[in-house]
Length: 327
Image 1: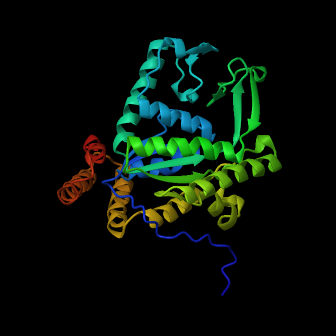
Image 2: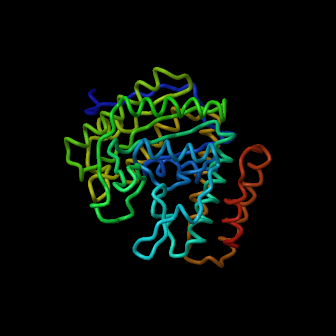
Image 3: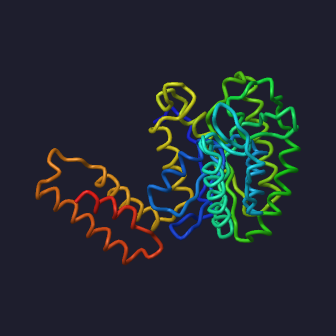
């Protein structure tokens, strides 16, 4: 019988992700969708230490800063609309207080540098090949911070530019951490403000660049998140109200394919246990003071303690604390 859909096949990749893996993720908001799932399931993962970034050059700049563990100072800060910020960071790092802004930025760089040193997995999600340059300096920015458009010019990156920049970056990454494996994805979120045709040109540029990189380097693979959404989930019921961003159902579908492609059978078994515990932690009865509910909480704490003894590479403490706080 016909399935009436086009299924995007993914292999069982040679790169495996387990709870013993150290994972760093950078890129678009789709990175955060996958990353938040990994965090909920107690994987060791650091997500977007510069905040959400969309274009390849800004992601490359961020990784170079992490390799060097380069710190930001007051001279790197800009001030607009009563907020301090840098052009390397998402607005989530902006702050009304300059010292707090720098503290948050440099703490995130420290954390990112530590993870990158020992990372088994680096997952990079490209969003767009369109970049914005600050006219004053000519530098590509990660975020315009809602400043006047007159301050910036914009252009599409060329395929060969991305390949050249990332060929140098990958060599630096391998030198910094010889054990690192890189997974590239392209965000399924369309940049509609550029227009339908321009969006396709942009995404095609990213596809060609990644294709060439995977052919040139070992331990680099591509995961087809974009294709899964465009060809398999070809239906607006998998999108949010803006008809551009994936909704929870769509994200879960891609996550399920991602987990089957990268997680071993034993890892999938333990995440099933953790998912059940997460659901239990979020359960709210009518009477939270009842003996029945207290027994329910105690039984789940006991279950976590049992899992801890047989899964020493997993930090169950955050999940256990959730239950303890409910007592």
